[in-house]
Length: 369
Image (tube, rainbow, N blue to C red):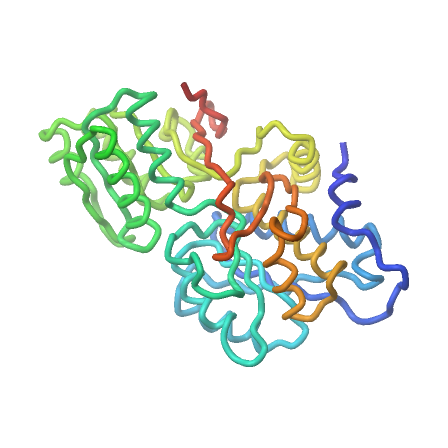
């Protein structure tokens, strides 16, 4: 089934056709890295579908793609370039919390601020950072506590170990998990930081084994989690492993990642007609691939911005005013990730997270009790 209904809702064309140049959206993320691939592909798919229906007010939609390499310094430079480009009416990005926080202050400053919608940046520090910053994903205030409740209530764990990447994302998931785990009566035996250049996590794992943990939270990015899983195997420990949405994609590691559970704002097997059409279209466009939460969020962001332009025009301030009313005073947006309704901080407080589990190389919904 094609996603005709979603396209139709988002793209009701204006009565007069107009003949201006393209409507340009910036797209910023680490597109040279595997984690950025789905975001780029899904955004392009959305643009292609919009243009196939006639574009916006008779104008084609176009992406201005900028690779931030996952670096905060590069993200600031990219943000300055997109901000300074008068053709760019809004930006989709950035992917991770660190780059989004760094770029947010650029987009929201000066005489001509531009809206940024992140598909996947989850740091609580983004909330209310600027009236021009929005996101379509839950924050770590949902991820960490949900993982803690799952560990206690479903897995029956009482003593947790945490290994976290020492950045905004890792610290946020670690902090919110630990607070909820302790509130529910669990004990965090130890929480150890690492950086991407850390050569081995074996000392942490060995110390946790002596301390007697019964669940391991990897508040990590994928390379760090893979290192931990390899070294767990070498040590012969087999704790249940939990992680945040930054581990999405680890299912491609096959047996190494089998059984890993992670929290996500979106799973491809979400039971919804719009999502089913999106997953089908994505697989058709990209040789059977499945989208992740980053791609689904970017897809929704493109269609949401298209609706804003169609109904309010392509001026930067008009787009911001339109988004600020989505969900209160203006209809919420029903996307493939669920219903998007912004609060005054640019967050989507009604969005919830789900637990996925790696089974046979795929990330599927985990039954929760």
